[in-house]
Image (cartoon, one colour):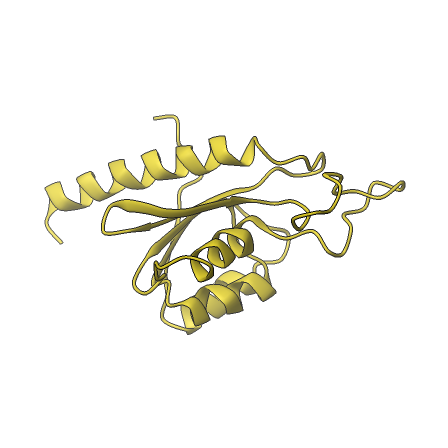
Length: 146
């Protein structure tokens, strides 16, 4: 890829990741607020943030402060929204504020997403290792403000 195309892609990557960061602010979770955007052909086809399933109270943590087991991760919410629509994740890019966990990495790969751009590392990096092994391009952009 030529230099100007790479610079342009980096500019778009940062812009979409900033949108994902803003989207994460909608989460009711107090421990972590994670946002995700799925983009295909420069069009946002889905969005998501971590939270409880539809119809459940918007409280992600139990009395001890631990995340409830049924809380959906941001990328899972975004992928599930696509599944309920006429869109497809095939060859799309996922922008997410935190690197995906193991379970979400399987969903990402199975959904046809070919590229993942993330800001912060999750405590377990096995999800990233799995995506790389599966042939998904993974880009880490920790600094969005320059």
